Amino acid sequence: MRGTSPRVVGTSFYLGIPSGCRSSAYDTVSLAADLGVRHFFTSLQMPEADIPGNLDEFRRIAVLAGRMDLAIMADVHPVVFQRIGGSIADFAPLRDLGVTSVRLDAGFSDEETHELLATANQFHMQVVLNASAANPLQLDRLDRLGVRLDGTVACHNYYPRAQSGLARSFVSRQADLLHAHRVIVMGFVPSQKNRRSMTYEGLPTLECHRAVEPGAAAQELLAMGWCDQVYIGDQTDDPEELKRLLAARHDPALILRIRLNPAAQAAERVIALGQAHDHLPQAFELVYRARGARQKPDLPRILPQPVPLPRPRGTVTVDNVLYARYAGELQIARVDLPADPRVNVVGWVAAEDLPLLESLGPRVRFRFYALPEP
Image 1 (spheres, rainbow, N blue to C red):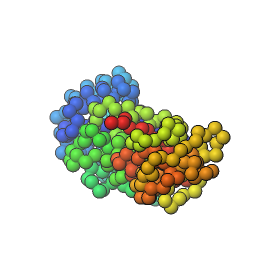
Image 2 (cartoon, helix red, strand yellow):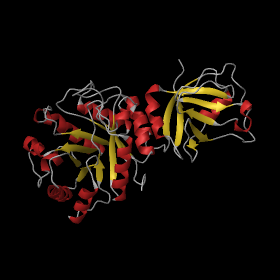
Image 3 (cartoon, rainbow, N blue to C red):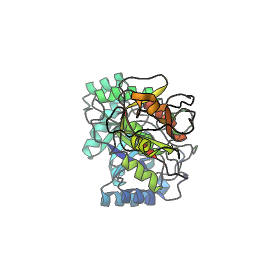
């Protein structure tokens, strides 16, 4: 069961901790809300953050959230109740800060999680489980304790330290596990414009997303069914990042940005850019192959390019008339390939998006977005 929950995107704000974002937490939330973002994440448990000293700003955000119907998820640990008051049985201090759901980090037993769920229900709030730490034994134990998992949200960790993020294969397996229990899965992607301390190396769930534009990274998590909800983990006030993130909710295809070859013919560009592409049902050793336009009676003649070009990994190509009945087939080089006079180079997947190619394969839908030509 993948992709059955409504897609949700959001972003983050932080109080009392350095960030590359020049806007205050309040101004960041206000900007994102004006653009249409309705879901926000923050953390109340980071030891280096001065949460008690910034509660006034949090209360201003709470007023804004109430006025604009915003949802705020807060990462909590038992130490949070020492900082702001309340307890496992009392969420009033959290509710008064505008928090609508609490995401459980380490530090709570299954029995405490059960009690937290009851408290959240009493305060009309939601408890969010840790998707990265979930395992079959824990989910079965929660089920035996009477926890209704259907519709519960589980949120992955983000990983500030470089080389420490999760693997695609693990996130895929976790999605299968959690979706089997009808749990909604959430993950994080990094900002490329504004990064938070401690390391200023982004806050992704997947390591391969660390240098990927957040909209494209979110598109992969959503398109592959690994997450139903995706937030930017860093605090960002970049409007374009936020707009691309919002756009990811509506397109089920994996988005790949490409630099167009200036020599590409109009017909080749139409084939590449004018539609979404479905990968063939098979996996291929050297290329990714689209179920494309070849053999269509109205296909324009694709003439050979004057100079055949080599095809490094990520090269987008269309076969020309020298390939006879294959003319019009669209491919992406999976490995470095030599020049071929029968194959025209349309463009190249942006270097930052090359990690996304790992998700291409049988029946995956993908779409190209042409970067502005210099």
